[in-house]
Image 1 (cartoon, protein in one colour):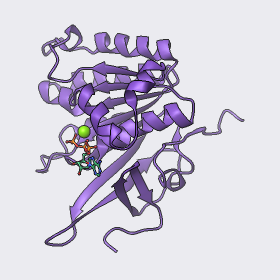
Image 2 (tube, protein in one colour):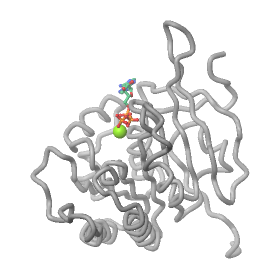
Image 3 (cartoon, helix red, strand yellow):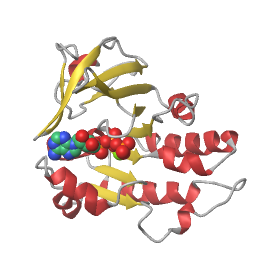
Image 4 (cartoon, helix red, strand yellow):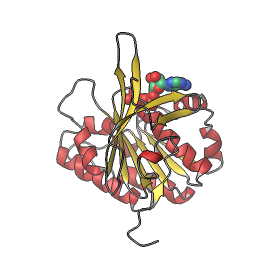
Length: 247
Ligand SMILES: Nc1ncnc2c1ncn2[C@@H]1O[C@H](COP(=O)(O)OP(=O)(O)OP(=O)(O)O)[C@@H](O)[C@H]1O
Ligand SMILES: [Mg+2]
């Protein structure tokens, strides 16, 4: 393999790989964006689950929104047993969800806000389980707390660079606010990411909505430029590459 060959990381989302030349470029940072309830967390955790169970790639999940016991319960509906993966050393969960007593890594007031504590924790898990995939769900939460966009951007950048510097493929999720507030946090994360995937759950009539997925950008890849149907099934998220939503 030449040094210019892009190695692909299978996403574990049926139907998605064929839209992006076989998977995410290894070691890149990919952003999964969408409004509330569009399936960002399920997609991200499925990426870790399938990575661990089918592609021999352990993963680290950093959760800032949902507590681990609820993620585990909800993913079990898809037959994805995260606790088993944890026991087998194929998954590490870093719990920064609000329900937990605030951990020291998150303490830090503007303008001295820095993520080096969090970075150290993530890196120690990566090394311990030899992780190849990392998910941060979601960076938006942190961003709302800090007003200095320059510091935020710099800190996010350092964090992402050190994770991918370990050889991991990094998936970030980001919530697009229901009311368009001029992109908000989303543009910082877009700047960090070499790929952006957007999930939709749009109203297609008075009585129904339809889920879909779009690859907005993926550097180094000839990707689909259409919006494709997506569904949340009993086995998790699935994409129908040949299907146009609403038809
Ligand atoms: N077992 C299931 N079967 C079918 N659909 C489900 C199932 N579990 C969840 N969903 C759908 O997925 C949605 C939640 O997906 P997910 O948590 O990934 O969204 P999200 O984009 O992360 O949302 P948020 O921005 O609130 O974090 C639910 O609102 C529901 O519509
Ligand atoms: Mg979520």
